Image (tube, rainbow, N blue to C red; front, side):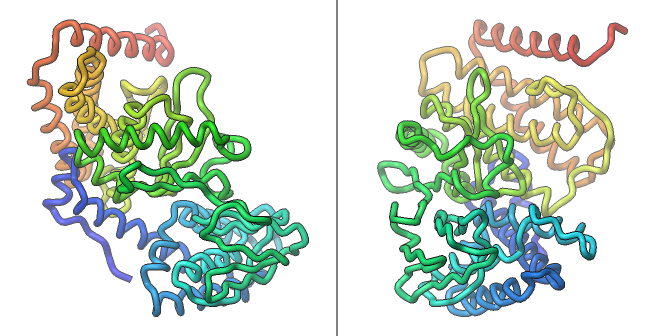
Length: 430
């Protein structure tokens, strides 16, 4: 094990809103290291669990594969749903009392499925035991084997030629639809420079309450492909830093339910590398969503390495939320809208309508205002104060940039209406 730190120049570049490939590499390395520690935690805490032997064997298989093909283990453990499963399992095993096993708790023997994925990627033969929940074996980043005849744990064999056999079903995990096999789909750019998995299967892909029912319909999957190609072309031509960071950080898109009006996107710190979203309406929306959510991913990873805030129980106004937010939410939102402001700032040069000007004017001022709230809170660490000051410096320079008067009026009216609605909703008459 080794400690991760962010060099001062990298942290300074991240504070300004950017960072690029070099900064992303530091953040990705730290998050993958966290996943490794969580898997180690699962293995140690599983002692005494009925499936402890299967867990220990799976860990040994992973260790053996890592000696031969370390990149296969690195990529497997880096998958967002693997990190989410490991975190949930560590929490469940930590809280577990002797003799009070809950069948609904995460099964630590899922580590066998993780090991089998690494074996396929490394082209190494192995045998492990895996859970077959309701007759389904989930292989993270690949898909699911359907074996209705399986028991609580079933033997899974990875053959040297890449075929996987379990519960009487034999499939090629890296090939498309086959009998007994539900593969994950991919979406990518036409130029082949970006390819992302669409995970609508893994039980740990996202929060149960917001994921879509069933798989993403084929017509919506086609819309995702079209929008991703448009968005990626826009990012590569007009927003190079966001493109570099997106390619380095994002590996998975997860379909979630759309709100009653508009679209929805989200990011969860426990699933680093995954962006959840409803079906995008167009490429521009998806490009701006990457600008927003990648910022959240970056800051979440930064906060795993350095401490920016002291504990605080206050609630504050956030110009992008209907409810009062703690400082932790405030700094996340500010950093995200710093990225959003930068996206629309650049996008103005490529569009003739007023909306990019309005968005830029609105969010540069809103984010700038909240940096003041953060700096005045007295709850920032020394590193946090330097970080927020870096954000504020970037936004202050953008406040001096010219915006058409009509766009400025609309932006201020929208901001005023939000604040008034927030006050009406959250504050008493006095």
